[in-house]
Length: 224
Length: 316
Image (cartoon, rainbow over all chains, first blue to last red; front, top):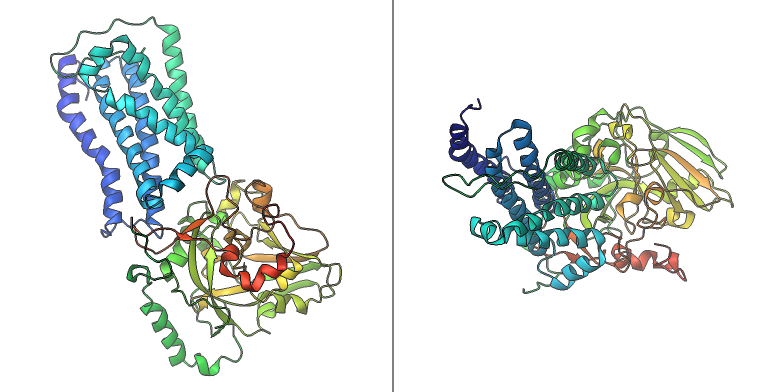
């Protein structure tokens, strides 16, 4: 399936896989929206607000973990072209996190800012969840090619925040469940594996040179 | 945002009750209606969905619209069948409720093992429409069918040392697959102070919406204590024990900072993770606001006296 020709692979990735992934990433939101609108077959159950809230939260974590999987995937397959998908996945993580917060703010709390501020201040799991959301904002804001060039090496430093965000996000999930921590522990295990892969890479290899930018699109950056 | 008067029921909040009333008409048509309900009868075998004849107890029923049958039977916390809200409805089919017996022990003159029928049959079934407030800050209105717990307990002649009543759920990981994981310390146990248990609002429930309880709602026999958080309403009861000391309770054992023995609904005492001041009424529209939670879930007039002089912040 994967062509040996790096340029063909790059084109496949950019013009086939990336648009498909983009559409696929919209599906969870579309399915929740269909449920909210009462489309047959997309029912959200007796507590639709909770279903939408938790759905957006879980997809935030899914996209965060997918984003963090791209570097190991590139390393394991020896193809840096995979990095072309990373920004989009990261921006979807941000989008779902923002939706998660907006559902909480508008549907769950009916814009009762007093209650929301009290929650953020008083409930540790909400404090860390909100902190993670705030930390995603500068990453999303500096995700353009222009910002990458402008920030240079500082861009990489800044974007290492994604590891902190992922830890806070999984912790937020773990702390939120009442008793059954199995699912948050699965997320924690996947995150731990991704950390291990990163740690191994940073130990075993010196920082590779930044590859020359491709003819089109954003330059591919190394994550170190 | 404009705040609508919370006492006004919006059209969107009104549950489609056609099904419910059709069902009641059906009951009457087959001769189990208002005319012939002097004595409640538990059909045998007591399969889920079988009709029950029960007179509505107006005094102890709220005038609020009940939630739909679908809401009541598909959105459940019954960790014995999984921790997702839809797990009990999906998995509770494996529970065998026939035959069923309950062991009564402890500080009482009449103890032993009793069949479900022998426990329920001497009493007239009542329908009571109660508010149910879950500790997770959502609520429903549910038309239960049951018998006053106190009336049943009196038949076992508790002695003067019986200060508390302890309840236990069936432990059977084959029938209750959720028990294969130690999410809680199985079997589920709950308890009430004897005066709480004897209070006329405490109900031993065998049915909902005029029918035998579906398994996911705690068949064949469950407790409903409407002024307490839902988790006090232990399901699929196999053991009742009269004790001198406060019995252990499952959620208190799991997380004592969040769940006390009393677990009275109290908007002023928060769960560590969320406020208990307001609740989401299940079945309301997507944009409806949470409604204010009432102390003792609105049953304060009846039960506040039980807790006179007690610090409800300490005994949460």
